[in-house]
Image (tube, rainbow, N blue to C red; front, side, top):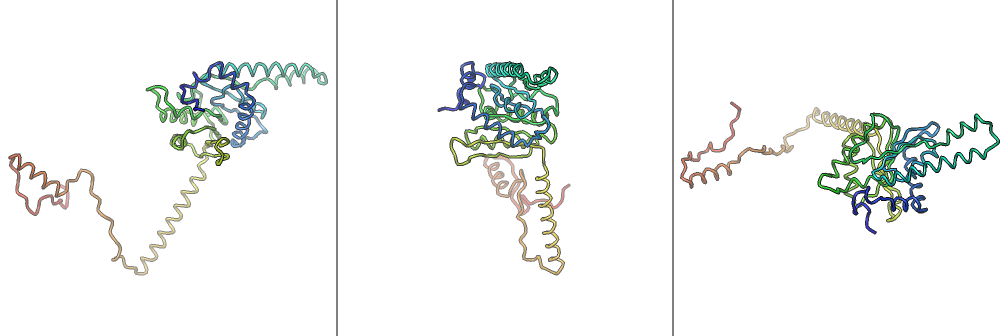
Length: 314
């Protein structure tokens, strides 16, 4: 089976037929739920209080439904309008079912019943947007971000104006802006090659993110899942640099103590002199002068001072 990314843009692939098929497949629903739960686990959210989560490539709202069950608010964006229509229908049907369940519950008084109805309504919003053009939100809007099976679409160009590296950089740069400091992003994706995974990671770290790729079931061809876990936590990097600095300073102190005791440096090798770019060698100058002579031009004779470097600048 060929990859859907090779057939064209995601907005064209996920038309009304594919969107209905995607949402009605019990296997796909189960896989999406499993991946979303794993992504939420990697987010390490405090489930005692609700968080505002951005769902990039939300599709038919399957991942958003899991976020609602965990008690979080979410906003989903997707490039396919047909997928968003299916997600809107899902949210509407879910609200109607919740209202019916509340009407059947006669053991509670009117006020508490009204509060439960208010709580059970959908906590998500939908937005039509292409993540490759950047995220159009205010800085520090979201507590966290998830993305399920969408990031790999940015590695493919469907027109001469689309450049995968630029689109990835624009996306990660805007994601870095809209996330609150201390927040996390977990982006699950399916790279076609190892080069795509490297490209995605490089673009994420270049804009300032810390983190890496977590691979579940690495030895399985079908069950393997890649999760790009991003955060603003640079403590580990700072600790590594501090440890490296301490190691270099201790090594320098040891070397200095050895030199003080009278160790000789006569046997040490000098670093080779690297030729600066643009500096002409003697062979090149002699060859150039010989060529000029063959052309009949007046050239000064070769001496021992030819191509000799001056000790000081004028």
